[in-house]
Image (cartoon, rainbow, N blue to C red; front, side, top):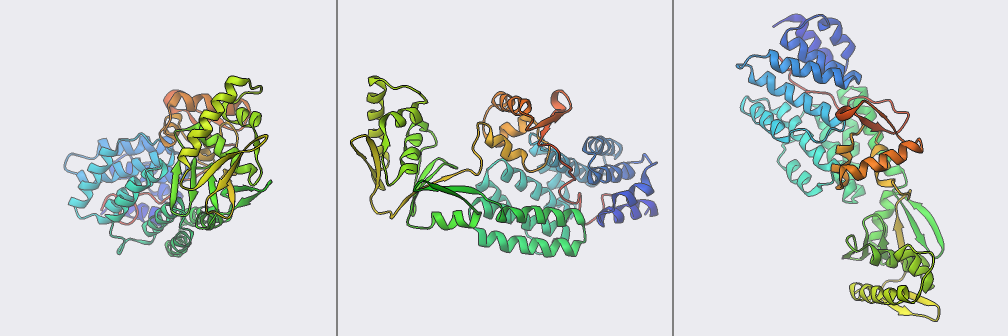
Length: 406
């Protein structure tokens, strides 16, 4: 074993990329290229890191399938960190299979975690849970165990299971301290802030206040009828009525929910539902049709009654009606929400995560850039967007455990 390569690998495993570069910075053999790529990724130069890892893949011979697979996994993590979510999942899956076939269970688990984190980031929570269930976490090293617990916490937060999320974050914190890697400790701390940061706003009886994630969980478990403007559903106990594909009906439900126990004038409902400043008789007729549809959709949980000046929402069994809204509501709030993670995103990755077209996302980014709420760097396919100013680093230790040249 080359002593310099071994020393550089141990420095990377300990979270010391500068120490690794001191040993291999001037070398161009395949193992050195791989280690230099990982070191540059940990230092935040993801473009250079990707170039070095691709050079390492080419430099490793056909008989060195294990080393090539490890480089593919490292490159996949760089793509994840730089929010290039369109990377080839098949290549990562093939690399994971190669690692498993050669008995490298740690890096195979790392590849699986990258797959799960990508699924979680683009909102495919069920698939993320299924993929995570295939992992045996019993013998993971501390660095990878930290990533494992962070994924569990992320899924729990999406499922509004704050108790499970807190438990997973506590385990992640212990594992990160055991690993002794500052970047991992910072990532756990950042993830923990989600539980102490307002996740939504509660609007009811003419007032509004911020809610933490655990308060949102408690609200949805209460006896209140909740008009959820975060997911565009109406929620009461175990019943969830989706209006995500019926924006006019949801706009009416929200307006009625915000005014409860009072009523909403007809002209105001026309303005909210059809986005019109002035209403004529044809609009009022259309309003009656849409309210009849809303009454039919909500018949199991509430009724919509006419009053002298408009309409009011009357719950059947719920004690109160409230509206659950996003913490910040503006035209491009969903794009800003993804950019708030501090990472640089491509427009294609944002489109994938938001489930919309890349052109729609690009228009939003252009508007936000004009308002100086986001900034970009690079050109063409390398163009990335972020909220200014941001200082970033690779989110997890690349290729934990066994070194890429073992």
